[in-house]
Image 1: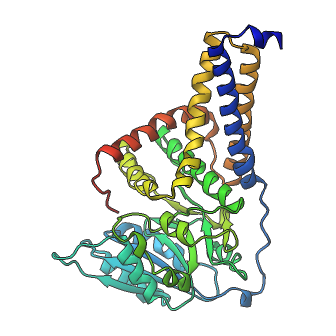
Image 2: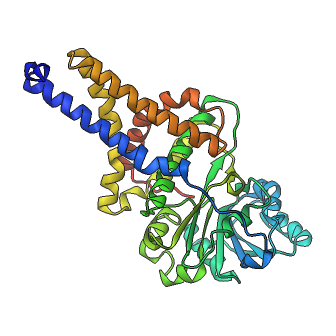
Image 3: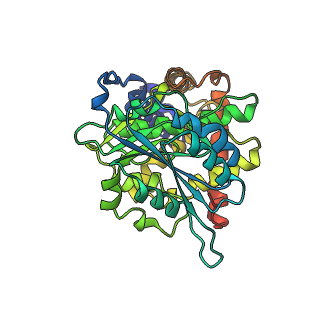
Length: 379
C-alpha cells in the first residue's frame, strides 16, 4: 500500500487504466471464448427418419471452375432427403454448361437462372431470394459456390440441431490450409471471428453468422420479409439477417469439424483486403450497443499493449504489470490454441502473437478505408 501512495496521480491513472483493460480482455476470453472450447455437442441421430428434408441454396456468378470441382461434394452428401438449388446469377462464363452436365448426373440438382438486364442491376440478396423462393423444403442450408463441405456428413451435422424451437443454425466456414504467411493470417482471422460469434451465441446473445455455412427456416425468412430491412446494402445477407432473426432461444451453433465448409483463400494481400472491406462494410449497421461492446475487445487490447509499455517506461509497479500482461497473453493463447485444435486449424500458433498485434493495425486500416472511401464492395 505504501508503494501506491508514492505514485503520482498520472502514474495511478496509468496503473488503474491498465488493470481495467486487462480485466476487459479477460472478460472476453473467459466469458465468451472459453464457452466455445468447453461446449459439448449431442451425438448425431442414428434414425434417418429424424432428419427433415433440406434445401441447399447456392448463388453463383461466373463460378464455372468452382462449380465443377466443389458442387459434387455438396450433391454427394450422406443425407436421406435433400435438394440443391443453384442460382446461376448473370454468369458470362460456361457455368450454364457445367450445371447442365451436373444435372444429368445428379437428379437432386435444380438450377434457376437470372439473366443480365442492362437496365436493372441487383445484389446477391436478390439471387438468394430467388433461390429461397424456389426451395421446396422448410429447412434451408446456405453456402457459397466457392465453398465445399469438409465431409460427406455436413448436412447431417447441421440437421442434428433442427430441434423444437430452433430456427437458425450457425456453422463454421473456414479456409483451405495452404503454404505462406498470408494463408495463416487469413485462417487466424477467421478463427478469431468464429470465437467471437460462436461465443456470443453460446452466451445467448447471437448476432451474426457466415453465409458460407448457415441454416434457417424458410418461414422465418418470409416472416422477416427477407432482406427488406437492408435491401439497399450490397452485403449483409448473413450477419444483418441473423442479427434480425436470431434470438437466445431459437439459435443453435454447429462447429464440429465434420460440419465445416472450406473456401479457397485469397492469394494476395490486396485481394484479401478488398474481401475484408466488403465483409466489414455492414458493421456500421449493427445496433448501437452491440457495436460499442464488440469494439471493446480491440480497443482494450490496444490499450493493454500501450499501457504495459508505459508502466515499464515509467516503472509503475513493473513486476505487477508484467505479471498481469503475461496472464492475459497466457489466457488468450491457451484458449486460442485449444480452439485451433478443436477447429482443426493447425500450425497457426507460432504466428498468433504477431497477428494479435498486426490485426489492430489491419482493422484500423479497414475502418479508415471504409469511412473515407464509401464505394460499395460488390459480391
